[in-house]
Every structure is written in C-alpha cells, then in structure tokens.
Image 1 (cartoon, helix red, strand yellow):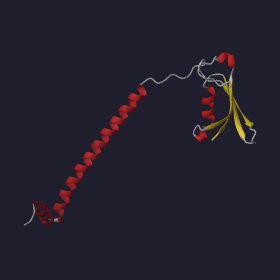
Image 2 (cartoon, helix red, strand yellow; image 1 turned 90 degrees about the vertical axis):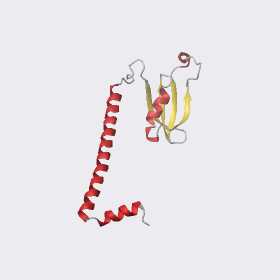
Image 3 (tube, helix red, strand yellow; image 1 turned 135 degrees about the horizontal axis):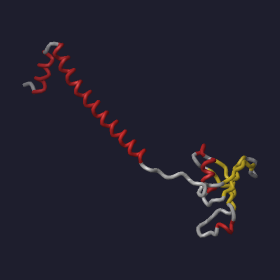
Image 4 (cartoon, helix red, strand yellow; image 1 turned 180 degrees about the vertical axis):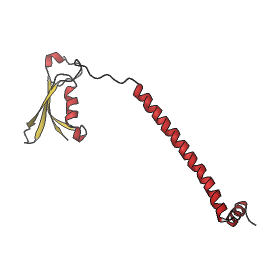
Length: 137
C-alpha cells in the first residue's frame, strides 16, 4: 500500500521533464521573492534607525573651561626602561591622559610613581597639580 507522499512523488516523476522543470521553477521563484522582500524590509528598517539616531542631539564637545590640561614627557626610570611622566591640572586628567598615551595596549598601564593624586574629600587647591609616572603594558 502506497502512502500519499509516495503517490505524489511517483506522479511527479512520471510527468514530462519540461513540466517538472516548470513546477520546480515556480516554487523557486516564490522563495526568491520572499527573500528579496524580507531583505528590503530589513534594509529599510536599518536606514530609518540610522536616520533617527543621526537626528538626535549628542553630547556637546568640551569647552575651554572643562578641557583637561596636561603635559607629558618621556623619562628613563630607575630600571633603565622608558616611562612617561604626566603632569595634570584637573583631578581625572592624569588617568585620562595615561589611557590616551597607552592606546596601543588598550589603555593598560602600570603606575610607577604618583604625587598629589586626589582622593575623596581632598582639598585640591592645597595639594597642587598632580603628577604620575607610568609605563604602558
């Protein structure tokens, strides 16, 4: 006793070759249309999201009163290897500058010496400007 799928398959295989190709092509076209319409919907949604994101206001750039003032120089540390000496005016300036200098090591650095680095509750004006000596890596 033949199953329904076996019967349909045998009828399909007994059809002329041109008829089978026409049927297969008909169903292939449907899949292509679904993929094209889905892809078009995704691209349209992505373009709309990008346009919306670009229209929103972002953070304003730092003005002259909030920018970090720091100076840096290359020094030779006690072990004979190169290090960076950073002097900065703002409380977070030394850390921010150290991350920028050590960008090639993904912001990883080792502190060799630090002076006047702020802690919670400090009187910054009494301590004076901060300085740090770092090595990247």
